[in-house]
Image (tube, rainbow, N blue to C red; front, side, top):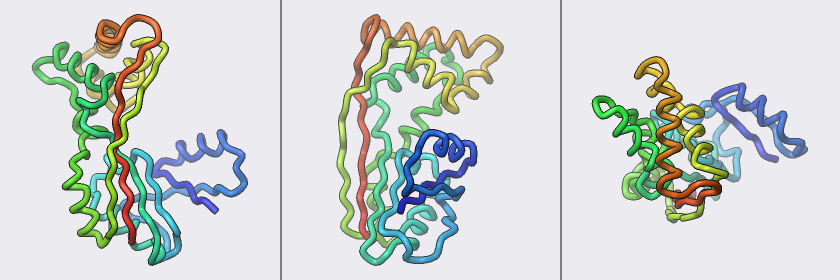
Length: 203
């Protein structure tokens, strides 16, 4: 049995609408304060969520608490932004477009928790052992430069930082990022490097 959780109910509603798996149940939960008894899960898995936890030590301690003695905690985070081509071009372009106050959400949050030494230290402080950390490089593909530009500028919290720059800046930024990605990676279908860090820790 799999229990899938998210902090936001609309995300759970979307997940329910997209799956017909009989062995999955859904529930709302805060990863920093898990509402479960001690030692009830064989594994706790978090996909690209840890970077967004304001209180990572509490989240790690909570994950360990709900695991059985031989349980494993597995999660991944994005590596440094320089190793992720489309995201890197995005922040470089926005820095040129808004030099006085560049939007930094991508570098600050999704790509802001990649120091392996820090990750291992926090896990050990939470009581985990047998920690394995692996860097995984893949290729990101898109039909054109505009798709990642829309994804980053309009489909992430970066949008709020851009809109705060004034009326019309969201489209201006999206167009500039799309053009920059196309200039570097070509017109039409594009490919770029994408890199993450995968972590496994035992209770």
